[in-house]
Image (cartoon, rainbow, N blue to C red; front, top):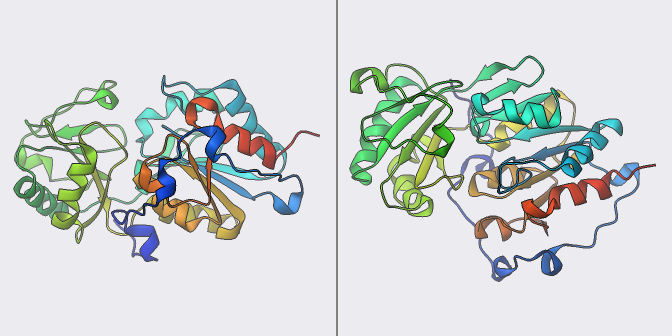
Length: 305
């Protein structure tokens, strides 16, 4: 099940903008002066990526960040996590932030209720498209190993090399015939040596007319979800359900898969450690994920007292 494309910005995840400003990476150089203290200047919705944006290099979330997001709800606004993580990797996030609200997972392909810890909506790639995308990827990128990611399972071919994000489960290898027999939220490919940027450059022209292809800086990994599915599409649907317009949303991210979401939101922010394409595309560059850059901005938006 996929949904139609709504805007070019939402679904064209392989068009990357760069400018000379992308060389700025330190907080002192790039953190904008921002004084947001009135209700009128506050967003009604905070949307943020997780890994590399609010989750630190060591996998932790600081107490400061958790407290900053608690302020958002205390002020009567909302926040939503918009992540490439599948639901099976959200338990730690629930523990850090509490069982609050909704998470848009798998880059928009799965909607996850953090209170009930259940998937409430799925936007999958159909079996015919999966098989054709796999055939084209193997032709365009010899040596690539492929897998299909479900909410709580990962099925792969014999060439697929499990990564750090796969350590929590046993990768199932059902054989070629069964691998493409079930619709899947995400198709992933890992190569023995090519970088994520290199893989995207090869994969986009090969399968971009079938699926939305992108990378989230996974090690030697390229990813694909259904055509018309993206973080922006998931966020737009979520915001519409709350009666919130794009102008009332502030979004934070760090990787190319965040670009559609950042383009859709009224205000966009990249952490200083972000991919160059993201640094050049946003309204504001802020402190890094290891410096609690997002927390600092949220605190300014929602001051105590």
